[in-house]
Image (cartoon, rainbow, N blue to C red; front, side, top):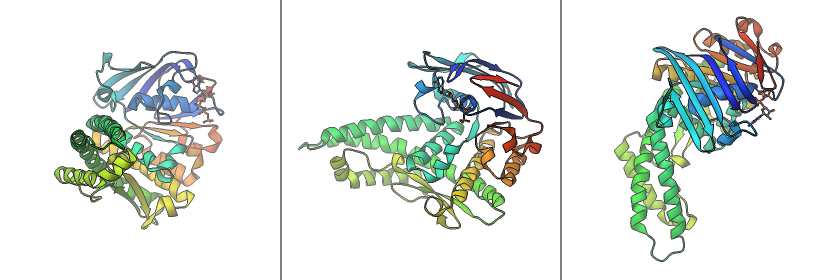
Length: 370
Ligand SMILES: Nc1ncnc2c1ncn2[C@@H]1O[C@H](COP(=O)(O)OP(=O)(O)OP(=O)(O)O)[C@@H](O)[C@H]1O
């Protein structure tokens, strides 16, 4: 798919911006703090209705303003599609071809993107919560049904945690009520776990091949789901449900003491291994960065496999961090297949000959010129 144009109103430091005729490769060049990341972030927000760098939507609306508006024209395999998204403290409103969507999940996935930004190193180095967010956002993009279960799970989890807190120190805990929440938690929980496991198996296939290529065959990358209960590879829903309920009953005393739910997809993790060793613990900085890169490139192929179209690639401040060999490999792999937006402080830091047909945009203080 291909983003043809974009328009922003009161989005971050853009008061009003209209950009047309994007090319296959688009370079956004400018000094620090001018609005380069804000622009690729806006494309990301149009795809997922959320930013990759904050969960607080208020930050996306320009200071002093009450709402922001983003829109784009996207060329897809089956024709053009217009996307509109409004953000305000009251919530978000999304339109496809001018028609308001009742649920945001009906809008998400209309535009598919893969963002690679410096903070993606945290997927490998950071806390389990970051890896869960990565899984949830990526699966949500290609399987909207996933987001429904995720929202329901989060609701039930909050209610169950509140109940556990209320029951704390009471003589006669409300066991009956807790069991109702257990059932609902397990119902949505197993759907999430199953989809995450299936996603990881597919992502692993692509990531392994790509990582092999990047490292000249010297490194074997493996992805492993680390569940808080049951077997890591088990996908059978009935079995997972049984295992989840069993785990909750085993943990009940502990949960009542701590006032929180201690097992389920909100406690699961994802591990990366290179040649049998965990990258989080034993990987060098370079291996961790390459792992993150392989994951992102694998995602591009996976999205193509799932939806039959390549996503748009957003490279924020990362291309200049790669050595010339990796820069070239990245650009050559996707040239003419994947529309790419690249931010950098200067064209000097990029292997420019590979980017000679790129559209170049100068970003300065919330204004963009070509
Ligand atoms: N809600 C907002 N309203 C207005 N301006 C904002 C808002 N949020 C961020 N900004 C401004 O946007 C600018 C940062 O833009 P951005 O993160 O896109 O920089 P950048 O060009 O990518 O820089 P770098 O090269 O340092 O990454 C800052 O000047 C910041 O004050």
